[in-house]
Image: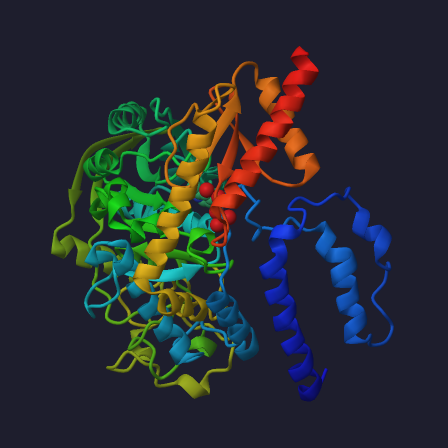
Length: 564
Ligand code: PLP
């Protein structure tokens, strides 16, 4: 495809997208296809020669679209919303067209700086404490866009794991890291998303699930009990994940209580607010965030409710040094003359404040490890600790000029890594913030959305979603055949037919088979429910009424079939 054809076909594509979104309400939201349907429709091999664009688009309309779940439909109530908006689509279009990679500042200065600015705007819009923002040159806090909440959780867990291992190995230089790792334990609620469990699996650490209260909330006393018992067994609590807005029922862990427990035991507190984070744009919902100042990291998905299309997860940390300690590598080909003077999101920050390691006094006898005291190292001890860390890194200080840059820059062949992996995090070179190196220009779509809607537009959108969920809740409560076993929070209503679980299971199965509305289930202590999230920004009162009528019609059929 050449420039001229692109101009024509891309404009047609814009019309195609606009028509799709304008009319998506009319489409069957859940596809009527069986596994393997597409294999029967498309050839087994790629074409030998180029095909006409119009032939390709014909296949999209005839074969691909009918096999999609239409996530932007107002009748989509499954999972959590994954909203898009025209400003966001245009941000992604532009980012795709430019296709710049923003790993170092030098690889795309505006890409990097716009991300910092947009993340600060976003953090302020949610009312995050200043320590998470990236505004002051000597502050170690800051935000970075990740692909998903799962990745943000993993990054946080790995950073906390490194912090703890460094503290433990400082005090037990003779003990192997692998052995110390076996003593680490982390915590989350029994309602935490499966991605938290996955982070523990990848991080090779034990995870304890804390039983939640009747509101599905993890409380401080239960966490304290578990931590105290684990410490007696010689385990080291190093990371706690609190969920604000659980996947099953949008329940909120008690952040204030959990923060106190984490502070007492020196555990890193991560907050997973994947869905509910967007609601904190509205001050009336921020009471759930009380205690956020005690968190070490906070993540939410603008790609869920904030109308920034997938992928976009906002992660803030109070101390980016912990990320740099975890992810730092420093090959010569990524260095640039402004290294250390600007953020490199794969890497380096402005001046990084050296954050103290905390002291954990432990005795290891055989495999027993006991913690006798949690304290901070003195400045002197910290300096020694950091020096020792540098010893691992071959301390090639002579490679660096006074400004921290590499005088020998051009003389070393690309790919030659003369600095090993474990570096002094306070060296203003490459201070990584994430797992991948390359990164899309995601800040563009976020910035477009923030500017196009403004804070007031975003608040209006969130409040409208909550209002429509309240409307649906009222309709359910007015029908004596139904019940709502969990409190509705924000835009999610969980409901069921009174009686045996099989009634509700049957209802959901038939609803999805008819394809006019789409929802997924959850289960709370043996109680089966249907989750109904309000999704599209275009959802109207009438859509909610239509969907409720569909639920009522199918329910009447089922009750008639079963009870006559
Ligand atoms: N955390 C919570 C509370 C979620 O509800 C979800 C997904 O819905 C996730 C994490 C995972 O999100 P992602 O798909 O961005 O990894």
